Amino acid sequence: MIYEKNVIMKRPLKVDIRFASVYPNLYKTAMSSLGYQIIYGMINERKDSWCERVVYPDTRSIESNSPLKDFDIISFSLQYEQDYFNMLEMLKKAEIPIRRKDRKVKNDFDKKKSEYPLIIAGGPCATSNPMPISDFIDIFIIGEFEPILNDFLDLYKKLKYPIKQLESFLSLKGIYLPSVNNKVKRIIVEDMDHAYHVTNPIIAKAEKKEDEDSLPVFGNSILLNVSRGCTRGCRFCMSGYLYRPLRETKLQKLFDVAEKARANTGLKKVSLIGAAVSDYSKIDELIKGLLDKGFQISTPSMRIESITTKSLNSLKKSGAKTITIAPESIYPLRKSINKNIPDEKIFEIIKKATELGLNLKLYFLIGLINETKEDIEELALYIKKIHSLKDKNSIRFSINPLIPKPHTPMQWEGYDLKDIKSKMKYLKKELKGIDVKFDSPKMGLIQYVLSCKGKEVGNILEKSLDLKIPVKEWEKQSKGYYIKNSNKDNITSNNSNILSGVLGSETKLPWENIDIGLNENFLKEERKKIFNYENTEWCQRASCYKCGICK
Image 1: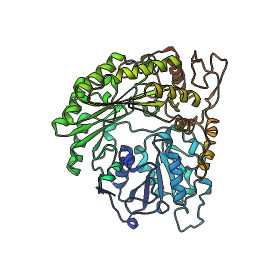
Image 2: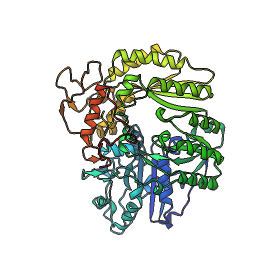
Image 3: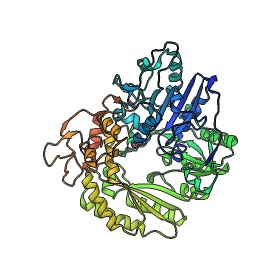
Image 4: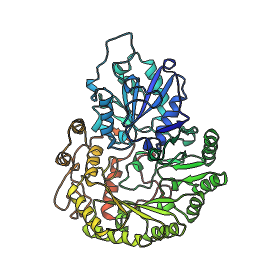
């Protein structure tokens, strides 16, 4: 049993809008999501609305134990494509038809709402490519919800029959209606000092020791929104393209938020949250300032390029036990995906961390589009070399298949299950006895289909509620978006015969109506650079390379 403090309770009959914020994943993940807590805090600051949380596998709210059908609006936070299965399962368990067309509207003019709630979705998955789940959702929020959240609720209140008047929501920025298939531009918070910062986080405690595994991933901590967006330009990273440009919260604002949250909750632990926390322009001052104020500090992951000896010492002093870094691959491949980090820098960080007694977790990718058999053999040797540096502290490795993602230079690629399996098999054999976690090639295939395909995937998702979907059915969807010109330019799968970045005949991408502001020609040029092992400088240090975001 988990007990919570700082839960917001209201009287249902005293509010105009009951809003169910649904996280279709486990509680420990939900309560470590800053975005999820932001929505909760923002809505509950309104007197006319009550936001309650519903977390998988439950279909009743944590606050009042109300069933999903009792709410006016159901909002799904979609952080991971695999959560689509949980989302549909929750709707089915709640006795809400999963398809939009099956959710009938009452012809009752005395009532404002339909027989079922308005169902909306947001988060990175909904923003990048809503098409696979477009038959299930009424409204998608493209980008960050904060800039329009209050306007959205005001409009909902104003409309007599919101479920019948969906097109009225197109008056707001960042709204995509699958029923209309409108073109939409992403919306984001432009000034982080005016973003919503959580100063009264929910605190969770376990009644028994066996319940501790369900506690939030970051523990009870103040989630400090250091920055959003990243312009390092790693060519496989969707969030690095979706949420450009880099936006930082001012140093004093962060100190103020931390102090206020501590005063409200008594918490002393701070988790630094951002796509590239160690890229924060005043990271050393931030860490030192928080330490001087008596806070403990943790950070989910750090960019190798911007880690300093000073920041490692500060994290150790703060009580940090583990740091997570992502070398991704051997140097030539790392450079080709725009992580031009020399091996010397990586080994310097590993050596310093081990000297300080810090544990290390390192992430690697396989299945890059220019990757050869020889590269995989070299990767095995590289991991063995890092492992040999282990002393009393632990060094753990995670090897994951690369998943092509929308709005990245990889968006035209397919997913070669056979190739990934073969590479995994080799690495498992070579790295036997080393602490390595291998992600499932099959789950990578499914994630790829859910990431990059269109409306047709909705049929497979619906079938999955009652049947186990054969791998072959997922594989049918796993081809890329270009027709090959020749063996030389075969780019529909990841294999060692790829010698060129030249694209074949182009087909339309499912997410063509979702405009996140990027110039497609920029993405194509970045794709060519993969094959040329060519670097694109970080725009914080170089001149603008015209990705399109800053116009």
